[in-house]
Image (cartoon, rainbow, N blue to C red; front, side, top):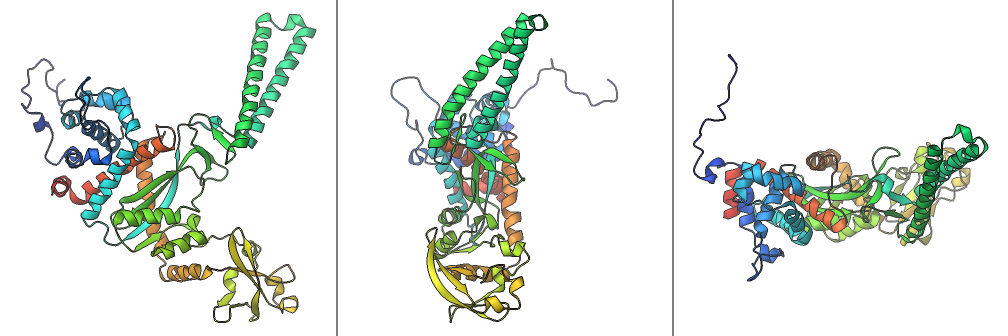
Length: 478
């Protein structure tokens, strides 16, 4: 093989370094994982098996298994079987575990049995980042994204899907019965093997319909009217594409706008973000250790009670209003065209008329004031305002909070862009690392543990990019 770069002879004796430590460079990120785990108080975090039993077979120390998982999630290796193989051939893992190679069952059981402790480790890294003064601006962007669960769409049912499936089976059964009738009329045209196959299909359909009818009772008793057979906590959630949905979880994150670290996260199976703003903002504020916080979110989080709760907690929420006005869609005046006069508690309409307070009511637990002008029936602009006799204007009793927030947004036109470029990138990175399957575990607690490992791996990678390996190790050990 002349004029090619040639490798070494496989039979040639080679003098490898004498020490395992010589294989790993001083700036290798695996050293940062080792230093971080070394500084953790695993007993205080709640890990099992920190102190060895006096009798029985010796087990692996939790620090060894935690190192394996952090390394695996940083390098797109989430499967316990793949992690077992990597501990036997990957030099970085061989160094990290000191040549220990737990079997896949031991690795998987560690993640299953130490979920709360692993989630605390993720929070502990945020505490470290706070000590390193990474959250000085106290501004976070909040968003949610849908992640696929270990549950096929065909294994998720609601009343509509169940009825459609039953109708499909009934149609199939009808076709098979018609073919049996044809076989009875013309026995020579249908073979005995085909008849036996059809009868087997009919028995299978009857068994399937019996099972589906039993599922109907479970669906009707479910709080949200749906059930998932593989992962009972997973739910069918609408995605951004029109008419599309996936069976999975809604992952919420709060991301620091300066360094793009995920300061707080949670996993829910709710299909929308309406009630997530205040809880996520509180988690973020607690994580960064600040009394004040500015929280940016998109329209999906717009909810009056949530925004008022943030205001009461000292959290400045910046959420654009949802564009759901039927009048605006019809080309009529929108509510924003009516100016509220706080001193007189009335609205001034586009025609200059006074829409005064008429009565107060309670709708969906909210106190709502109603306003309209007496001049509506004879107003020359009525055709552009309403199709009814009067243009009624509603105002929530705490709508002043929303008006104040809108004035803030008007003074900060770049908020939407900052939010988007801050919080969208971490989700893309997490999903790229997860691969096509996203979560590998089932049920909400275990999925939350898996998400914490992903977030920890992401944050550790960000910290390495910010400080570099050697500097970060020095900060961890300081």
